[in-house]
Structure formats: structure tokens, C-alpha cells
Image 1 (cartoon, rainbow, N blue to C red):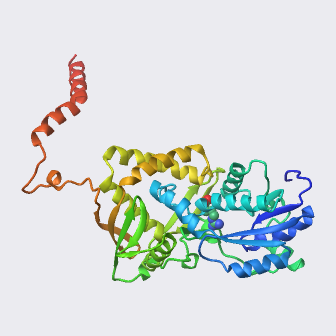
Image 2: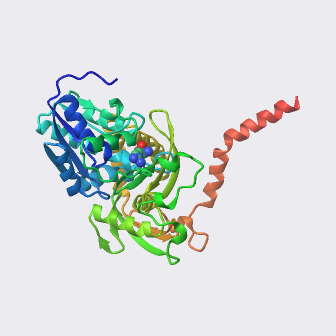
Image 3: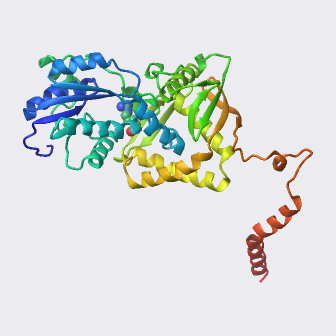
Length: 408
Ligand code: ARG
């Protein structure tokens, strides 16, 4: 049984337009005898917002907010993750995880404006998203009540929800059995459930939404030049794009080449291992380019230390700690490093792979006179001798001592 929450007069629901949150509008009104306001954020892709809005009103929402969050999502969330090189467990670019704190923040703002006494979300009790939503809500307004009906209600299966919808004349998009659970935004698509629950089963082609299979991709590559300014992508070839447009464009072209598919058994915060597949063409291309530009422009110590931060930063995002002081402190470090990350990377897209083939920057630390094996070499070979002597000294001493001991 869920928490006892008494007297709720008005709730703002994070509404996606899907089955769960459609049924939820009706369920909340009935259970709490309260007014329900729906809130939907547009994060790019996959939804008919007008239709979702109409349906929410028909089900009984008093008002529906649809906010275009694409720009804010990219500038304040996606690009922070990109600058940090944040990738979870080697593969997941955190598309879903990054969207949650933003949706939560906006949900709270609407609740405050509407003087609502609670917010509600449609997450299950087994996933990461419930944690991300609720932790971000707490961080944004510690006094606000949060309802998570899916954890409490009596509707245990999708069929029971469909039956509830039918009985109560709730318009839903499709009553057909859904093969997968999908969450998408412009940073990527997350797909789970159905046959994917067997970690050995090969993902069927119909599971993918925005990428073609690499086998079916064109046999001529596309070569792109992606330019960055202080760690942020600004141009493809010679054309400047706004951030949302740039990502959309790379998704399209990357998807056409079968780039950005990942298949992962991941560790959820709540202790479960789950299998999920992902599609994120733009993110995979941009991460590859960004890292390469850092290889050129950051000194070794900063670069290597940044890799450690990247791991932790990805974990914080995954684990719902976007609003934490540690993440904020990391942002200070990351922002400082990005002052140098300006330049252009050339990348070849071909049958599922994106391969960097060149990089240049006004802040390049590459010095041909030092690197060359040809004429014009300025590296001090004599210094190398002394350097190696001292570098190896502890091992030399140890080996000598070990040798002495053996003789005894
Ligand atoms: N596993 C991903 C995460 O926790 C995505 C979760 C949502 N996935 C979905 N298919 N609805 O961030």
C-alpha cells in the first residue's frame, strides 16, 4: 500500500500521452477527488502533442501545459554531458536520464504557479526514472508532495490498464499489445521490454526507431567536418546550426549510416540488471569528435584526470543526482577545461561506424617539430637518456636488492 496522503486538492501530472499517464488522469481524480493538471515537455521526437493535449482534456484534465523544452534541454543538459564526456557503463549516452531533472524542474514550476499541493509521475517502482524525478523534485521544492500511482495502484498489467481505459471511456492511442517500452528525445532513443528481456536474444530490426541496420546502410561514406567552440558543437562543414538543429541533422545522417546503436545489460540504481538497447547517432558522433578535439588541445594530466571525472559525472546523471553539489563542482572543473576545446574534427560515417580522420585547432598542443621522425626534429634525444635513468631508478634499485637476496 502506498503512503497515506490526505486532502489533495490539485495535482500536476507529468503526462506523456501514453497509456499509463492517460489512465492516471482519471485514476487520480477518482482516488483523491482532486483537480488534475497535465504537463508535457517537448524534448524532440516521437509525439503528436496536439493529440495528446486533446486526449488529456477529454479524460478530465482541467488544463494541459505543453512546453517546448528542446533548446533548454540541449543547452543546459545535453551539452553539459557532452563537455563532460559522460557515458554510462561504456555505452549509454544518458538520453533518458538527462531529460528527467529538466522535466521535474518544469513540473515543479507549474505546480507552484498553479498552487497545486502535489505532483505526480507515471514511473514504475523498479526503474531509475522514479528516483530521478523524485530527487530532482525534492531539490527544487522540498515541501511538495509527490504521487507515484504506478507504485500503488491495483492495475498490475498493461491489459488491466487497457481494460480500465475501456470501462471508463478513456481515449488511448492504441489498444494493441505494445512490443517495447520506448523513451525518446533528441539525444537518443531507449528501448526495452518484450523480447529484449532475454539478454541473449538478438534485437529484432523492428525494435529500432531512428537508425537503419549497418548492413543496409549506403556503401559510400559521408565525411563531415564538425566544428566546436569551447566544447560546444556549432558547425557542420561550413554551415552554422543552432544546437537543436545540429543534433537533429546529425541524427538523420548518422541514422542513415546505421550509427549509434548500442546493446547493453546495465546496472540500475535500484539494484536490478536490465537489458536495454539504445539509438543515439548524433550523440555518438559528437562524443567521438569532442574527445578527439580534447586529445589535441588538453595537456596529458588534465585529459587523464578528466576521464576520471567523466566516469563519476555519468554516474551522477544516471543515479538522479543532477542537482547535487558534487555535479555543480565538477561543472566548474569541466567548464575551465573547455576554454581550449575549439576547433574542427573530420569524421567518416560508414556502415555503422564513425571514424575520426583529422583534427585541427588554434589551440592545438601538437608540435610537429617535436613529433617528427623526419628532418627538422627539435626534440632533445640527450634529455631522454637522463629522463629514462631517473624514471626507471626505483625499479633499478628494487631489482638490485631482489637480486642480492636471491643469491643468499
Ligand atoms: N535504462 C535507461 C535509464 O535508466 C532508460 C530508461 C527508460 N527506458 C525506456 N525504454 N522507457 O536511463
